[in-house]
Image (cartoon, rainbow, N blue to C red):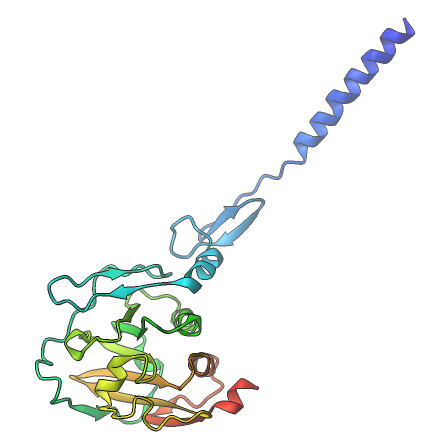
Length: 247
């Protein structure tokens, strides 16, 4: 009889432990724009059921390309903002040898782009720092639908330049739009190892912001200085002492 009671007690104890384990399961309820991620919630601004943090990490290896063949322009993208339409090409630049780039005057280097159709463009052969710089710009503008980004091939000409406001990252050696718009014989122009340049211009009625340095990482630091308001952001051409940004 004692053995029977002992066995019954063991069975009841086992059921009790299983019930306790089941009660440890956490019930998570997330409010939009947050979604459930395991036993926690994460931000999902673009409502695609993927945590924005995961998308940012994945996009460090973005490889977006735009073909320069006029018969078949294609865009491959893997970025946090979905490019719904290919950028409109500026068809008025039929003669790239006759380029008219004018001064934009005293304007806020980033504020001028708020609420306007804008393309952020950098060279296809550039590295992760320019991808990170682009993500910082998109974060500054809170990922607006009017702002997109893509890369260009080394052979891209101004016949592929979009009919919109543009932010160009890099230098004339890795971004051919910079080289052609500024008519650079030396692809680095006046850039030096320790000097970067912010330059605001207008091309065919649209604003063009050049953020230029010899090294991709320095372009990244320059973008950081703009979005964090560490640098004066008004003017049409500003030289930047890069050593002051890297410290």
